[in-house]
Image (cartoon, rainbow, N blue to C red; front, side):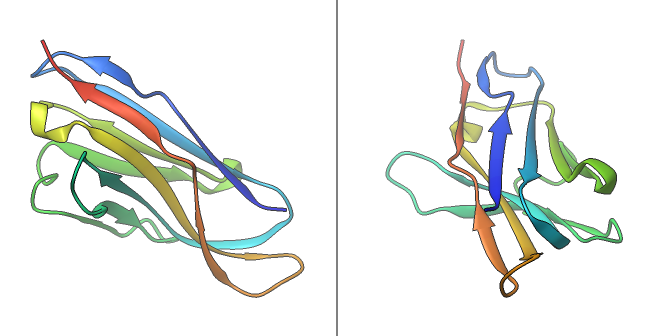
Length: 120
């Protein structure tokens, strides 16, 4: 069974930095794209950043210049480094992976989410 587990969230002051990580574990054959989404209270879930297996990245306009997504393919890990955080970045951050398990078809998997709060 495949699991995505996020870590590293918490409370940070405006202008501060925070890093969130996600590890994919289980019977995984191959991981294609990985990414981060977020959902603020009362809003729909939105894309933050994605990274392909070849490390090509894309970002939401709100994240460009402030957030950096990276991955360690050997460790099945994706990291989102967030700088210059703003109160509007407050949300539950969800890890996403497009992967194929050893037994099963390729599909999207989600972590349970981790809360990031930007507040003074």
